[in-house]
Image (cartoon, rainbow, N blue to C red; front, side, top):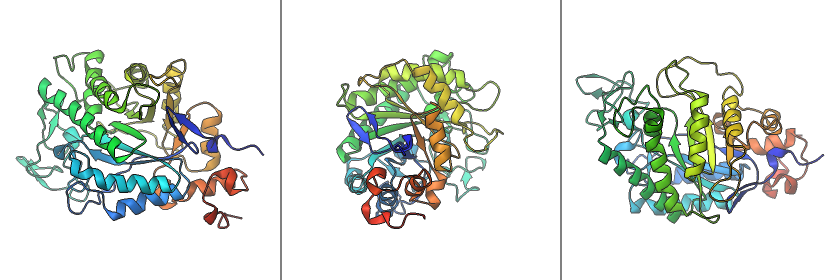
Length: 376
């Protein structure tokens, strides 16, 4: 049989992934020293998924500022001293045959909320925010159950955009092939985008155009660091396409934003949903894929600043090779990200290649050392 589309290479600017399977960023909360520095555990964790056959491995949300961490045990790239650890991690992922990506983020009003301390003291009442954590956000609106943040001034918002750019410079120094900005799941960029968390009346709010301004400013600042031409590093952004709440972001809003992001320098649009406010929504197999399809249709005729086509990545309970292949064959996305499934099976790509009828390690693009362990 012909090679499944899932195992075809994926080109993004000058980078080429061996297949279209991504490991998406997933918080590990494993920096015991609380200094943001990569540990041996991180190196082993991500190297295992690279050896398991993922084409692109994206490292978990990595803070651009200490106060932007989701927990004290998050990775960071706010200091040059953190670069060397990331360089070790990149080398391990590359040795496993995968592209190395990193997600840069700032938690905004959801920072300082480690999941293992849900009743930590914060402010005047007990909340899930660590006591003393300086929460910032577009507006002084708390995420339910968290402490009330203070609203960033316009000057402070620009400083945060610069912090993203500085962290991106460090990511380039570490050797990452792809830098992804975290614009999803209710964190700072998402907070600026959504009318449910952004009630500003200055240039960074007040209208859909104003609410998009911080995201676009940040993208442009990072794009300058990564290089403007075809040889520049790949720039992606993860978006929550909808808040799943009336009055919040919709798929149509995100389709408009996606086009502006491509013009600003984004190469990859990684489409998720939710996280900015509590919401009830369906979570069946592939439940978010239709939003990726909507974004892909919106940018289909566009060309990135690097000269290629925008890449759209789908995610959301994709748990079999046949399901992932169908997403690609039907044109709903260009790549598929597999998260929780990959936590329990680092070798999911090898398993899925077998399920899709691939019978040779060279065709699959996996290490020969592991092929004899394929599922018969």
